[in-house]
Length: 408
Image 1: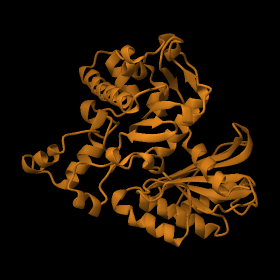
Image 2: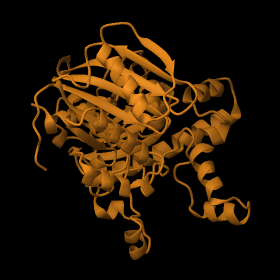
Image 3: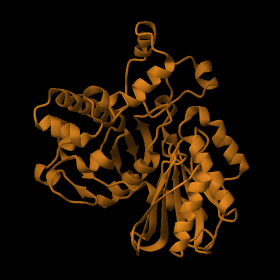
Image 4: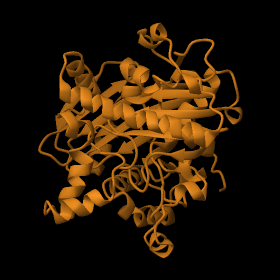
């Protein structure tokens, strides 16, 4: 699409959820990796009796307050006031664009897109595929447009990085007419994280992304894996929705579809109840009552059998995906762990690759358990496949993509 060039080097990144808004203001001509964070913030409990706003400027004291913020417009207006108080207002000429995380872009949005009414209509048309996320994303976009209509609003889609998956990997073996009519296929999510980590892993190896095959493991409360060949995603674990794939904090991941019919017929559960069960009461939470991996590891170390089993189920599924993606890629140069669990839980990394030495994948335990931050290798020097820990930065990835589109 035609690039819209605009003076200024700042990008405001907005992540609008159903009851929260996270934001970061970045200067793309800054000093750290070519960027500098000027401010970060969070507005939560939007629509409740007392919403909470936390604002942290790069140079100044963290500010926190409670206020009556009934909707996203009020929340973003409050955030804009905090930014303005630091001389970083939305009307500043340095602001090149506002970048919005949009969860679902379907098959049509394959790159960052300047938003107009036509684009908004397409995002709304995708609401049935992401009913909990796209409406909130739309609310954030419309509010930002109302606050300053002169600044380009750019949508960056979680699904975009996965649109390169070949058709034979994206299709489910369903009746083709039914699948087409209802847009049932694999879309994948966490795309900005997978894109960022794959590229940073290649840099860590001193190679171009086009020359590196990487298995990216984004392990947070939500978790997904991807197979990235030469910078292009060729397979991912999440599907039509974020429910498919790995065991997660509260989501089941892969499950026999007939479980749904069984629960309906035998347990008498309504579809809404089954939806809640699989998305909110399953995964680690369902197995042991805790969705925080730190608690699972603590309990496991103390001999708790439920926590041990939950950990083993989690690792078994993760290891299956690593092996499967080795087969999909044919040649693997690196396995990269990222997100909250992937970056911080050394026992998860160690267990996930244990027994995979025949595939050239193993970790060096002193490197794996060392208390370090930043991108780093944790595999032995002799290993055929590098194992890396690469902290993700989805906001930076969104800002980078937005600035490439509209920046001066």
